[in-house]
Length: 227
Image (tube, rainbow, N blue to C red):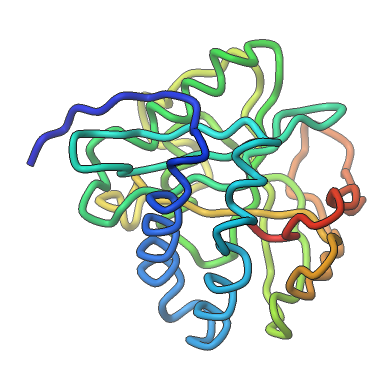
């Protein structure tokens, strides 16, 4: 299988390919973590074509593309204090080949002075392992609901200028290393016509920074609270 691709900003024509990646990734990543009806309902609502096109237009949205189409994508928003990685996913067949890392580093190069954050559903070792190996550390924990299903998320941070970890980070397990290509998403509450989401920060796991016990700012009108 080819392992070369082009990393570039997404265009409106990429929406269909992004949706295909998101659907495959969500079904694979969250099987056993979320109810099947939550997974399918989320894909249907949050990855509707017009919603994806809006995100491509408004966000910092990059894709990894090869001859046959989109194999991975990343979506980020600028916050006052950081770059918020709200989604990063690859086709399951392309995990472990570098597409996710290339997308993350493209964003880091675009915003070299920004810390990067990402929210991960607790128990998602595919996502946790990806971030552990790329210089992120756990911070606060948040309780949320997604389409009526309670979930717990952990927020991960990487300081500006950090690079890939060369060995296991202290305090983290090494299970599921074969799945480090994948990919979690986190989204802000609010937004017209969006799935019902509520998130509350409950604790901080960081000893290096004060607890950031706050919710995200509201989404822009018409935008999904979960990518």
